[in-house]
Length: 390
Image (cartoon, rainbow, N blue to C red):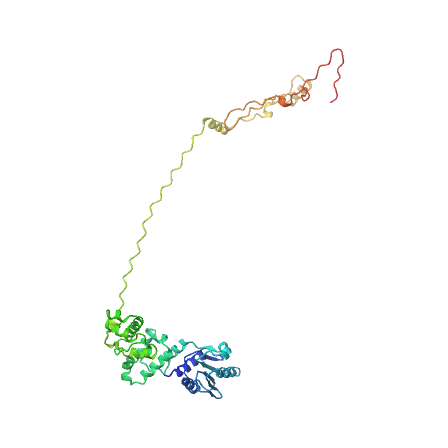
Protein backbone atom coordinates (compact mmCIF):
# COMPACT_ATOMS: atom_id res chain seq x y z
CA UNK A 1 0.00 0.00 0.00
CA UNK A 2 1.39 3.36 -1.01
CA UNK A 3 1.16 6.38 1.22
CA UNK A 4 -0.88 8.37 -1.33
CA UNK A 5 -3.41 5.55 -1.54
CA UNK A 6 -3.77 5.62 2.24
CA UNK A 7 -4.45 9.38 2.11
CA UNK A 8 -7.24 8.83 -0.42
CA UNK A 9 -8.83 6.04 1.65
CA UNK A 10 -8.74 8.09 4.86
CA UNK A 11 -10.16 11.18 3.14
CA UNK A 12 -12.97 9.19 1.55
CA UNK A 13 -13.92 7.59 4.89
CA UNK A 14 -13.93 10.99 6.63
CA UNK A 15 -16.15 12.51 3.94
CA UNK A 16 -18.63 9.64 4.10
CA UNK A 17 -18.72 9.85 7.90
CA UNK A 18 -19.46 13.59 7.88
CA UNK A 19 -20.32 15.02 4.46
CA UNK A 20 -19.39 18.62 3.85
CA UNK A 21 -17.42 20.86 1.53
CA UNK A 22 -14.35 18.67 1.71
CA UNK A 23 -11.36 17.35 3.65
CA UNK A 24 -7.94 18.86 4.21
CA UNK A 25 -4.64 17.32 5.30
CA UNK A 26 -2.25 20.12 6.12
CA UNK A 27 0.52 20.21 7.07
CA UNK A 28 1.74 16.68 6.37
CA UNK A 29 4.84 14.87 5.24
CA UNK A 30 4.71 14.90 1.46
CA UNK A 31 7.43 14.86 -1.19
CA UNK A 32 7.26 16.36 -4.67
CA UNK A 33 7.01 12.93 -6.27
CA UNK A 34 4.19 11.89 -3.94
CA UNK A 35 2.33 15.10 -4.85
CA UNK A 36 2.20 14.06 -8.51
CA UNK A 37 1.27 10.48 -7.56
CA UNK A 38 -1.60 11.71 -5.41
CA UNK A 39 -2.98 13.85 -8.23
CA UNK A 40 -2.82 10.81 -10.52
CA UNK A 41 -4.57 8.23 -8.28
CA UNK A 42 -7.11 10.46 -6.49
CA UNK A 43 -9.67 10.72 -9.36
CA UNK A 44 -9.69 6.96 -9.84
CA UNK A 45 -9.98 6.15 -6.13
CA UNK A 46 -12.38 8.94 -5.09
CA UNK A 47 -14.51 9.38 -8.19
CA UNK A 48 -15.17 12.14 -10.69
CA UNK A 49 -17.01 14.33 -8.14
CA UNK A 50 -13.84 15.30 -6.24
CA UNK A 51 -11.51 18.26 -6.80
CA UNK A 52 -7.85 17.66 -5.82
CA UNK A 53 -5.40 20.41 -4.91
CA UNK A 54 -1.89 19.40 -3.76
CA UNK A 55 0.97 21.67 -2.67
CA UNK A 56 4.50 20.40 -2.00
CA UNK A 57 7.89 22.10 -2.21
CA UNK A 58 9.61 21.34 -5.50
CA UNK A 59 6.55 19.75 -7.08
CA UNK A 60 6.16 20.16 -10.84
CA UNK A 61 3.13 22.39 -11.55
CA UNK A 62 0.06 20.70 -12.99
CA UNK A 63 -3.34 22.29 -13.63
CA UNK A 64 -6.36 20.51 -15.05
CA UNK A 65 -10.12 20.89 -14.74
CA UNK A 66 -10.29 19.19 -11.35
CA UNK A 67 -6.63 18.70 -10.40
CA UNK A 68 -3.99 21.21 -9.38
CA UNK A 69 -0.42 20.54 -8.23
CA UNK A 70 1.79 23.47 -7.31
CA UNK A 71 4.87 24.13 -5.18
CA UNK A 72 3.26 27.03 -3.33
CA UNK A 73 0.23 29.32 -3.05
CA UNK A 74 -1.29 28.45 -6.43
CA UNK A 75 -2.82 25.21 -5.11
CA UNK A 76 -4.52 27.11 -2.24
CA UNK A 77 -5.92 29.68 -4.67
CA UNK A 78 -7.43 27.02 -6.97
CA UNK A 79 -8.85 25.15 -3.97
CA UNK A 80 -10.56 28.34 -2.76
CA UNK A 81 -12.09 28.93 -6.22
CA UNK A 82 -13.41 25.36 -6.43
CA UNK A 83 -14.82 25.54 -2.90
CA UNK A 84 -17.08 28.41 -3.97
CA UNK A 85 -18.33 26.51 -7.05
CA UNK A 86 -19.03 23.07 -5.57
CA UNK A 87 -22.19 21.27 -6.67
CA UNK A 88 -24.49 19.17 -4.47
CA UNK A 89 -22.48 15.92 -4.75
CA UNK A 90 -19.03 17.46 -5.24
CA UNK A 91 -16.33 17.87 -2.58
CA UNK A 92 -12.74 19.02 -2.30
CA UNK A 93 -9.51 17.32 -1.16
CA UNK A 94 -6.73 19.70 -0.19
CA UNK A 95 -3.30 18.31 0.78
CA UNK A 96 -0.33 20.51 1.55
CA UNK A 97 3.09 19.87 3.01
CA UNK A 98 3.13 23.39 4.48
CA UNK A 99 0.60 25.76 6.00
CA UNK A 100 0.11 28.38 3.31
CA UNK A 101 -1.04 31.92 3.98
CA UNK A 102 -3.79 31.96 1.34
CA UNK A 103 -5.34 28.76 2.69
CA UNK A 104 -6.87 30.42 5.75
CA UNK A 105 -10.41 30.07 4.42
CA UNK A 106 -9.80 26.40 3.65
CA UNK A 107 -8.76 25.72 7.24
CA UNK A 108 -12.06 27.19 8.43
CA UNK A 109 -14.41 25.40 6.00
CA UNK A 110 -12.81 22.02 5.26
CA UNK A 111 -12.78 19.17 7.74
CA UNK A 112 -9.34 18.44 9.19
CA UNK A 113 -7.95 14.93 8.75
CA UNK A 114 -5.83 14.03 11.84
CA UNK A 115 -2.84 11.71 11.63
CA UNK A 116 -4.62 9.07 13.71
CA UNK A 117 -7.25 8.80 10.97
CA UNK A 118 -4.50 7.63 8.63
CA UNK A 119 -3.46 4.89 11.06
CA UNK A 120 -7.07 3.77 11.49
CA UNK A 121 -7.52 3.64 7.73
CA UNK A 122 -4.37 1.51 7.47
CA UNK A 123 -5.74 -0.96 10.06
CA UNK A 124 -9.01 -1.55 8.21
CA UNK A 125 -7.79 -1.22 4.63
CA UNK A 126 -8.44 -4.11 2.29
CA UNK A 127 -5.16 -3.35 0.51
CA UNK A 128 -3.20 -4.34 3.62
CA UNK A 129 -1.22 -7.54 2.90
CA UNK A 130 0.28 -8.05 6.37
CA UNK A 131 -0.60 -11.34 8.15
CA UNK A 132 -3.61 -10.94 10.40
CA UNK A 133 -1.68 -12.17 13.44
CA UNK A 134 0.95 -9.51 12.79
CA UNK A 135 -1.68 -6.76 12.53
CA UNK A 136 -3.20 -7.97 15.81
CA UNK A 137 0.25 -7.95 17.46
CA UNK A 138 0.97 -4.41 16.23
CA UNK A 139 -2.39 -3.34 17.62
CA UNK A 140 -1.72 -5.04 20.96
CA UNK A 141 1.56 -3.17 21.56
CA UNK A 142 0.08 0.13 20.23
CA UNK A 143 2.50 0.31 17.29
CA UNK A 144 -0.42 0.31 14.89
CA UNK A 145 -1.48 3.76 16.13
CA UNK A 146 1.80 5.27 17.38
CA UNK A 147 3.99 4.58 14.35
CA UNK A 148 3.97 7.04 11.47
CA UNK A 149 1.51 6.22 8.70
CA UNK A 150 4.23 6.59 6.10
CA UNK A 151 6.39 4.02 7.93
CA UNK A 152 3.47 1.59 8.18
CA UNK A 153 2.88 1.84 4.44
CA UNK A 154 6.55 1.25 3.70
CA UNK A 155 6.59 -1.76 6.04
CA UNK A 156 3.46 -3.19 4.42
CA UNK A 157 4.95 -2.80 0.94
CA UNK A 158 8.15 -4.58 1.97
CA UNK A 159 6.28 -7.51 3.55
CA UNK A 160 3.46 -7.67 1.01
CA UNK A 161 5.79 -7.96 -1.97
CA UNK A 162 7.46 -11.04 -0.48
CA UNK A 163 6.07 -14.54 -1.16
CA UNK A 164 3.41 -15.57 1.28
CA UNK A 165 5.54 -18.40 2.71
CA UNK A 166 8.36 -16.06 3.66
CA UNK A 167 6.35 -13.04 4.84
CA UNK A 168 7.02 -13.71 8.55
CA UNK A 169 10.74 -13.85 7.95
CA UNK A 170 10.61 -10.60 5.98
CA UNK A 171 8.38 -9.04 8.65
CA UNK A 172 11.05 -9.71 11.31
CA UNK A 173 13.86 -8.59 9.05
CA UNK A 174 12.23 -5.29 8.08
CA UNK A 175 11.21 -4.24 11.62
CA UNK A 176 13.79 -1.40 11.54
CA UNK A 177 11.34 0.48 9.27
CA UNK A 178 9.12 0.79 12.36
CA UNK A 179 12.03 1.76 14.61
CA UNK A 180 12.64 -1.71 16.09
CA UNK A 181 15.59 -4.08 15.92
CA UNK A 182 15.53 -6.95 13.44
CA UNK A 183 14.09 -10.18 14.85
CA UNK A 184 14.20 -13.41 12.87
CA UNK A 185 12.19 -15.19 15.58
CA UNK A 186 9.19 -12.85 15.36
CA UNK A 187 6.79 -15.59 14.23
CA UNK A 188 7.18 -17.60 17.48
CA UNK A 189 5.35 -15.11 19.70
CA UNK A 190 4.65 -11.84 17.85
CA UNK A 191 3.03 -9.97 20.75
CA UNK A 192 5.66 -10.66 23.43
CA UNK A 193 8.61 -10.33 21.08
CA UNK A 194 7.37 -7.00 19.72
CA UNK A 195 6.76 -5.76 23.26
CA UNK A 196 10.22 -6.84 24.40
CA UNK A 197 11.86 -5.45 21.24
CA UNK A 198 10.25 -2.08 21.83
CA UNK A 199 11.36 -2.05 25.48
CA UNK A 200 14.94 -2.96 24.58
CA UNK A 201 15.21 -0.26 21.93
CA UNK A 202 13.77 2.39 24.20
CA UNK A 203 16.10 1.36 27.01
CA UNK A 204 19.17 1.24 24.74
CA UNK A 205 18.50 4.67 23.23
CA UNK A 206 19.71 6.49 26.33
CA UNK A 207 21.86 3.76 27.88
CA UNK A 208 25.62 3.76 28.23
CA UNK A 209 27.11 0.78 26.29
CA UNK A 210 29.85 0.35 28.93
CA UNK A 211 27.31 -0.05 31.70
CA UNK A 212 24.99 -2.22 29.57
CA UNK A 213 27.84 -4.67 28.76
CA UNK A 214 28.06 -5.64 32.40
CA UNK A 215 24.39 -6.59 32.44
CA UNK A 216 23.60 -8.27 29.09
CA UNK A 217 25.81 -8.67 25.96
CA UNK A 218 22.84 -8.41 23.57
CA UNK A 219 21.69 -5.17 25.17
CA UNK A 220 25.23 -3.81 25.00
CA UNK A 221 25.45 -4.61 21.27
CA UNK A 222 22.10 -2.92 20.63
CA UNK A 223 23.09 0.18 22.61
CA UNK A 224 26.42 0.43 20.78
CA UNK A 225 24.76 0.03 17.37
CA UNK A 226 22.18 2.79 17.76
CA UNK A 227 24.33 5.16 19.80
CA UNK A 228 24.04 8.58 18.11
CA UNK A 229 22.33 7.19 14.97
CA UNK A 230 19.42 9.18 13.52
CA UNK A 231 17.08 8.86 10.55
CA UNK A 232 18.11 6.34 7.92
CA UNK A 233 21.34 5.65 9.77
CA UNK A 234 19.33 4.56 12.78
CA UNK A 235 17.25 2.16 10.65
CA UNK A 236 20.44 0.69 9.19
CA UNK A 237 21.95 0.33 12.67
CA UNK A 238 18.83 -1.44 13.96
CA UNK A 239 19.02 -3.82 10.99
CA UNK A 240 22.54 -4.83 11.99
CA UNK A 241 21.31 -6.29 15.28
CA UNK A 242 19.22 -9.49 15.16
CA UNK A 243 17.34 -10.40 18.32
CA UNK A 244 16.34 -13.80 16.95
CA UNK A 245 18.92 -15.54 19.15
CA UNK A 246 17.38 -14.01 22.29
CA UNK A 247 14.69 -16.15 23.87
CA UNK A 248 11.26 -14.71 24.30
CA UNK A 249 11.49 -15.08 28.09
CA UNK A 250 14.70 -13.04 28.12
CA UNK A 251 13.42 -10.52 25.63
CA UNK A 252 10.12 -10.01 27.43
CA UNK A 253 10.26 -11.57 30.90
CA UNK A 254 6.88 -12.29 32.45
CA UNK A 255 5.75 -9.81 34.99
CA UNK A 256 5.94 -10.94 38.57
CA UNK A 257 2.53 -11.32 40.12
CA UNK A 258 1.83 -8.74 42.66
CA UNK A 259 1.63 -9.86 46.22
CA UNK A 260 -1.90 -9.77 47.51
CA UNK A 261 -2.56 -6.78 49.58
CA UNK A 262 -2.98 -7.40 53.26
CA UNK A 263 -6.44 -6.91 54.51
CA UNK A 264 -6.76 -3.64 56.35
CA UNK A 265 -6.67 -4.08 60.10
CA UNK A 266 -10.01 -3.77 61.70
CA UNK A 267 -10.29 -0.74 63.91
CA UNK A 268 -9.99 -1.33 67.65
CA UNK A 269 -13.32 -1.56 69.42
CA UNK A 270 -14.36 1.61 71.07
CA UNK A 271 -14.34 1.78 74.85
CA UNK A 272 -17.80 1.62 76.39
CA UNK A 273 -19.22 4.95 77.24
CA UNK A 274 -19.23 5.91 80.90
CA UNK A 275 -22.53 5.55 82.68
CA UNK A 276 -24.31 8.80 83.29
CA UNK A 277 -24.12 9.95 86.96
CA UNK A 278 -27.07 9.22 89.19
CA UNK A 279 -29.45 12.14 89.68
CA UNK A 280 -28.81 14.22 92.78
CA UNK A 281 -31.15 13.87 95.73
CA UNK A 282 -33.52 16.72 96.32
CA UNK A 283 -32.47 19.17 99.07
CA UNK A 284 -34.52 18.95 102.29
CA UNK A 285 -37.33 21.46 102.51
CA UNK A 286 -37.11 23.86 105.55
CA UNK A 287 -39.60 23.14 108.27
CA UNK A 288 -41.13 26.64 108.15
CA UNK A 289 -41.63 26.42 104.35
CA UNK A 290 -43.12 22.97 104.70
CA UNK A 291 -45.52 24.17 107.34
CA UNK A 292 -46.61 27.12 105.22
CA UNK A 293 -47.15 24.91 102.19
CA UNK A 294 -49.19 22.51 104.28
CA UNK A 295 -51.27 25.36 105.65
CA UNK A 296 -51.84 26.72 102.18
CA UNK A 297 -52.91 23.35 100.90
CA UNK A 298 -55.37 22.76 103.80
CA UNK A 299 -59.03 23.41 102.93
CA UNK A 300 -60.38 26.71 104.23
CA UNK A 301 -63.41 26.84 106.56
CA UNK A 302 -66.66 27.65 104.85
CA UNK A 303 -67.80 31.27 105.09
CA UNK A 304 -71.06 31.65 107.00
CA UNK A 305 -73.93 32.79 104.85
CA UNK A 306 -75.94 35.90 105.77
CA UNK A 307 -79.12 34.10 105.05
CA UNK A 308 -78.17 31.43 107.54
CA UNK A 309 -77.67 34.00 110.37
CA UNK A 310 -81.15 35.46 109.91
CA UNK A 311 -83.70 33.56 112.06
CA UNK A 312 -86.58 32.10 110.18
CA UNK A 313 -89.90 33.58 111.36
CA UNK A 314 -93.24 34.18 109.78
CA UNK A 315 -93.90 37.47 107.94
CA UNK A 316 -96.30 38.64 110.62
CA UNK A 317 -93.65 38.48 113.32
CA UNK A 318 -91.20 40.38 111.14
CA UNK A 319 -93.72 43.12 110.53
CA UNK A 320 -94.43 43.41 114.26
CA UNK A 321 -90.80 43.68 115.09
CA UNK A 322 -90.31 46.36 112.45
CA UNK A 323 -93.18 48.53 113.72
CA UNK A 324 -92.37 48.20 117.37
CA UNK A 325 -88.70 48.81 116.98
CA UNK A 326 -88.02 46.77 120.12
CA UNK A 327 -86.08 44.02 118.39
CA UNK A 328 -83.36 45.06 115.85
CA UNK A 329 -82.52 43.04 112.78
CA UNK A 330 -79.09 41.48 112.76
CA UNK A 331 -78.45 43.04 109.34
CA UNK A 332 -79.06 46.59 110.60
CA UNK A 333 -75.88 46.71 112.69
CA UNK A 334 -73.18 44.54 111.07
CA UNK A 335 -70.08 44.01 113.10
CA UNK A 336 -66.77 44.97 111.47
CA UNK A 337 -63.79 42.72 112.07
CA UNK A 338 -60.13 43.65 111.56
CA UNK A 339 -58.42 42.13 108.48
CA UNK A 340 -56.16 39.20 109.17
CA UNK A 341 -52.50 40.06 109.52
CA UNK A 342 -50.37 39.74 106.34
CA UNK A 343 -48.42 36.53 106.09
CA UNK A 344 -45.34 35.93 104.02
CA UNK A 345 -45.88 32.75 102.00
CA UNK A 346 -42.16 32.12 101.82
CA UNK A 347 -41.17 32.54 105.45
CA UNK A 348 -44.53 32.05 107.18
CA UNK A 349 -43.83 34.98 109.57
CA UNK A 350 -46.16 37.98 110.01
CA UNK A 351 -44.51 41.28 109.03
CA UNK A 352 -44.20 44.24 111.42
CA UNK A 353 -47.31 46.44 111.70
CA UNK A 354 -47.37 49.51 109.49
CA UNK A 355 -47.03 52.92 111.27
CA UNK A 356 -50.30 54.77 111.91
CA UNK A 357 -50.64 58.56 111.47
CA UNK A 358 -48.80 61.15 109.42
CA UNK A 359 -45.18 60.43 108.58
CA UNK A 360 -42.57 62.25 110.69
CA UNK A 361 -41.15 65.43 109.16
CA UNK A 362 -37.92 65.24 107.29
CA UNK A 363 -34.90 66.43 109.28
CA UNK A 364 -34.01 69.19 106.76
CA UNK A 365 -37.58 70.56 106.71
CA UNK A 366 -38.08 71.08 110.45
CA UNK A 367 -37.43 74.84 110.58
CA UNK A 368 -40.05 77.24 111.92
CA UNK A 369 -40.70 78.68 108.50
CA UNK A 370 -41.29 75.25 106.87
CA UNK A 371 -43.04 73.39 109.59
CA UNK A 372 -46.77 72.93 109.20
CA UNK A 373 -48.79 73.21 112.40
CA UNK A 374 -50.73 70.07 113.06
CA UNK A 375 -52.97 71.70 115.76
CA UNK A 376 -54.97 74.86 115.83
CA UNK A 377 -53.10 77.58 117.81
CA UNK A 378 -54.72 78.79 120.96
CA UNK A 379 -56.35 82.22 120.96
CA UNK A 380 -54.86 84.96 123.09
CA UNK A 381 -56.60 85.63 126.31
CA UNK A 382 -59.32 88.25 126.21
CA UNK A 383 -59.65 88.34 122.40
CA UNK A 384 -62.06 86.44 120.20
CA UNK A 385 -60.41 83.90 117.92
CA UNK A 386 -61.13 83.91 114.24
CA UNK A 387 -59.27 81.37 112.15
CA UNK A 388 -57.60 82.68 109.03
CA UNK A 389 -58.92 81.52 105.71
CA UNK A 390 -56.98 78.79 104.09
